[in-house]
Image (cartoon, rainbow, N blue to C red):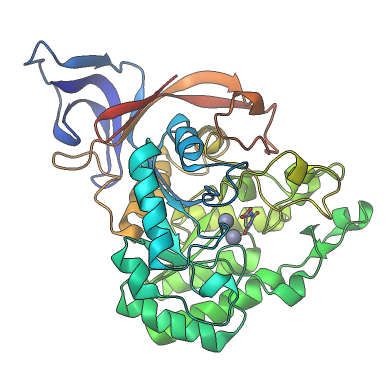
Length: 427
Ligand code: DOR
Ligand code: ZN
Ligand code: ZN
C-alpha cells in the first residue's frame, strides 16, 4: 500500500526540475518519479495534485522548541505540529532550553521524546559551552554520539575567542557544523530594536549593525583559520550580506549563511509603536540592509532561509519592547511569506525558494532529504499556489502567537505535508 501523487507541478532543486509529474511513495521512501505512473495496487492512496505544487518537505535549520524547561512556550509535540502545518518536515532544535542541552543525556532526552511525540524529523543542536556560559567547552563528542546534528550557542555568542577556538577544534574533530549567533553583548547593551531614526522617535534603546558585524568577522576568521564549517544564523545587516558575497567570490564553501523571512520583508520603519511583536534578535534593520540581504540571497551568497521560530508566552511578549523577550514565531508563516513577497514579486524563483528552504539546508546538515528522486525520503509538501488567505495568529497550532505578521494577506497555502511517507498535516 503506497501513496500515488498525480499531476502535480514537481519542483526539485537538486535536478533543477520544474514539470508536471507523478510520484509514487512506498513506505517512507520515494519509489518513483515519472511523467505518468498508473495505480498498480487497489489499496494505494491516490492524491490528485492537479494545480498544486509538489515540493520537497522544507528543512528549517533554526527552531526553538523550548523542551526541556519552557514547555509553556512550546514543546516537541506542538512545535512539530506547527512545522507540519507550515510544510516543514525537518527541523533543527536550538539548545538554549532550561537546562541547556550541553551534554549527551540531554541530547538523548530530545531524541527519545521526539521518537514518541514528534510528527516531523527533529534534529538537535548541542551547546558549544557548558550551560551556554561561554567558559568551558561542552562534551561535543558525547553529544555527537547521542545524535546531535550541529552545535550552537544560539541566543548569544561565545564572547571569549579562546573558548570558541577550542570548541571549533572539537567541532572539526566531530565533523559538526557550528550554527553561529553573532552578537557582541557589550555593543548590544540594553538595546531592543535597531539603532536608527525610528528608535530615536520611539525613544527606545538601539542595537547597531556593528553588534553583529564585528563578531561575524571574528568568527568567520576563526572558522577559516581552524577549518571548521560555520553557518551564520539570522543574518540581518548590509555588512554581513556583503561579506558573504566576498566569500562567495573567493570560492569559500565552508562558510554558509541563513536569513529569516522577517529580515527580508520588514524594516525597522514598520515598527509604528512600542510593540513586542516586532522585537527579535537581531532586530529589523533598515531598507538598505534589506536590499543587500535580498541581493545576497538572489545571487546565492546567502543560501538558506530559516525561521528562528521563537515562541513565547503572552506574558513574556507583553508590556514594552524594553523588557519583553526577543523572538517571533515562524514555522507556520515562512512558506507563504517568502512565496508572496519574494517569488511572486520576482526577487527569487520558485526553484531558488526550494533550494534555500529545503535542498541547501539538507546539504549543509548532510541529510538525504530535500530531493524529489527515487530512493530519497518521502518528505513532501503540497501547496495551492493560488490560495490567498490572511495570517491569523489564532489559527496557529504553535503555542506561540507572537508574530508581527498577524492580519497580513498572503498567497500559497500548504494543503498537505507528508513526512516519512505519512500525511502529517492536511489543510
Ligand atoms: O529573537 C531571538 N529569540 N533571537 C535569539 O537569538 C534567541 C531567540 C529565543 O530563544 O527566543
Ligand atoms: Zn540567534
Ligand atoms: Zn534562534
